[in-house]
Each structure stands twice: as C-alpha cells, then as structure tokens.
Image (cartoon, rainbow, N blue to C red; front, side, top):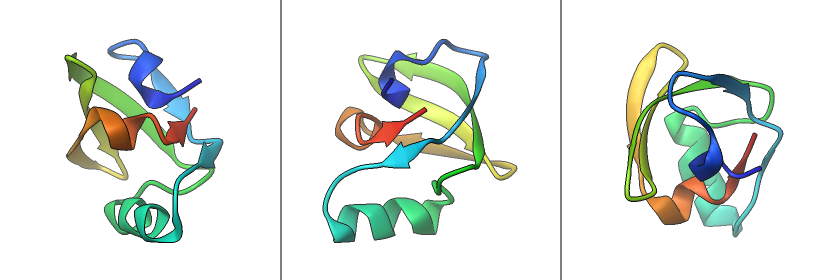
Length: 69
C-alpha cells in the first residue's frame, strides 16, 4: 500500500519506491530506501510527515504515493 494510506503512529517498512529515476534518487537522498522503517507522525490532506532514519521529513501526497510500504 502507498505511504499515504498508512495509519498515524504505525511503523512500516518500505517495500518499493516507484517513479522516475530522478524521483527515486531524490527520495533516496531523504532516506527513503527499500528495507528502511518509516513512522507516520501526521497526515494532512495526503501530505505526510514521517520519521525516517531518526529524522522527520515532510513529503507531498504525490511523493508519498510512490513509496510503497
């Protein structure tokens, strides 16, 4: 399921990152790589704030839909 559908407070493991190469590279630079655990802190209108690798990162709805957990 995409990250946008994950429940607040739940910790999930990233299974796949979709999108074009530049999008995957951008997300990888933020710490979103396969096998990493992410925790949804809050979600507002599909935009999410997640904790990944000890840092909090805000991700737009379009980007979050490319992250499969």
